[in-house]
Length: 166
Image 1 (cartoon, helix red, strand yellow):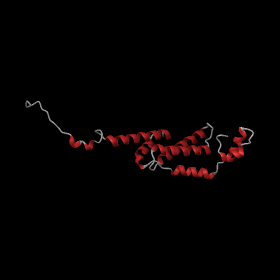
Image 2: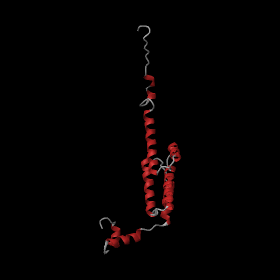
Image 3: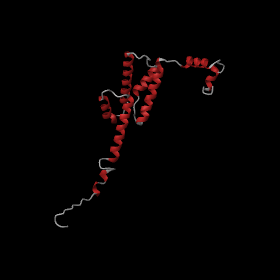
Image 4: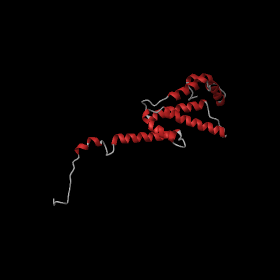
């Protein structure tokens, strides 16, 4: 009873067992209606990274996928058709993730889509994070070290020659 919202206590406080409580709560709240499933699909399809960080975007997408899977669970069958269906859903998740990325990841997106076999969503996320880290290193250090363009004018050159006796 300590973990149930106060507004729900009235309906379950006099239940004879925990099983009766769970059955009552399931009858009231375990309703999968088409509108929630539709809205989840719409949120997943329209979610984009925008100005959020990669980790926030990916976490939001994973939360939506988990809620969708809770409403529409996968088949528990291990038959070939079921495996094909699961494989298709995994590719769909990968495409959804890649479609929502900012345009700055277009090159990484293309490289991921050209891979064979197709990576999982988690592998693609790791590749994108690696690409993001690489872009950060290049942007902050350049080729010759930290901010080489600002230092180029301060280098002096000296020539040394053994010929001439100096």
